[in-house]
Amino acid sequence: MGMDGEVGGRIRQMRDKAKELSEAAKRTSDPQDRQRLQDKARKLESQAEQESSMGSGDIFPMQ
Image (cartoon, rainbow, N blue to C red):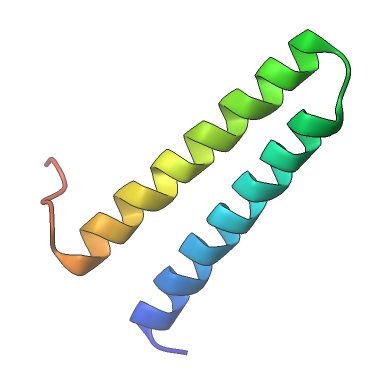
């Protein structure tokens, strides 16, 4: 698998995990647990978006 495929696979995994966490948050009855899961999901989705943008050349990483 090439570098692009590896990055795309990692981004896809991050987004899948974020979706799983969001679904788990919807199912839990504990408000603190729900908030923690939602925060983790948002953070993962944000990281996936950053990696996706960097991979496509939309932004330049800070040095």
